[in-house]
Amino acid sequence: MIYDKNNIFAKILRKEIPCNKVYENEHSLAFDDINPQAKVHVLVIPKGPYVDVDDFSKNASKEEIASLMHAVAEVCKITKVSLTEGGNGFRLIANTGPDGCQEVPHFHYHVMGGEPMGLRGLRKP
Ligand code: AMP
Image 1 (cartoon, rainbow, N blue to C red):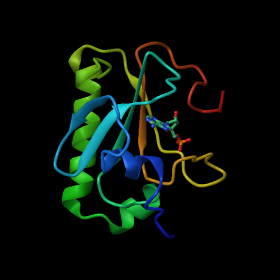
Image 2: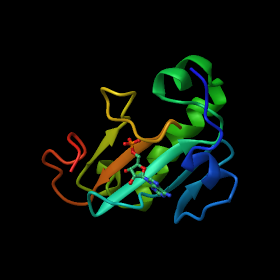
Image 3: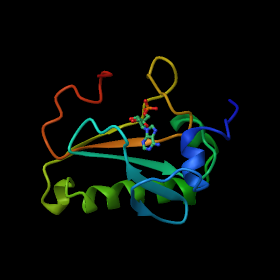
Image 4: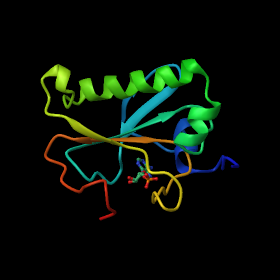
C-alpha cells in the first residue's frame, strides 16, 4: 500500500489547502467536511502518512492511535454530540478501499451527527 503524498488531506496537513479546524493535537487534526452530510460532519485524521484504518492499526505507534481516539472524543465533546456530554449520539465511519467507497487515500474518521442519521454516511448521496 503506497501512500500518495499529493492527496488532499496531505495538502491540508502541509497547509497548502485551508481547512476549518475543529481540533488539533500532537498527532491528529480534525476539520469540517467540505461537503457535510449532517449538521455535524467532522473528519478526524492522523498527521502521519496512513492510507486507511488497516494501515493505521498495523503501522501507527501506540501514541498515534491513542491521540486519534482522543481527538475523536474531543471532537464529539466540542460539537456536543457526545452522549457523555449531554449530546444525542453520532455515527463514526471509516470508509476503506474501493468497496468501502473511500475517496481520499489518507485515513480519516467521519464524525456525523447533530440530527438523526438514518442511512446517511452508509450510502453515497
Ligand atoms: P471518503 O469517501 O470516506 O474518502 O470521504 C472523503 C471526504 O472528504 C468526503 O466527505 C469529502 O466531502 C471530504 N473532503 C474532500 N475534500 C475536502 C477538503 N478539502 N476539506 C474538507 N473535506 C474534504
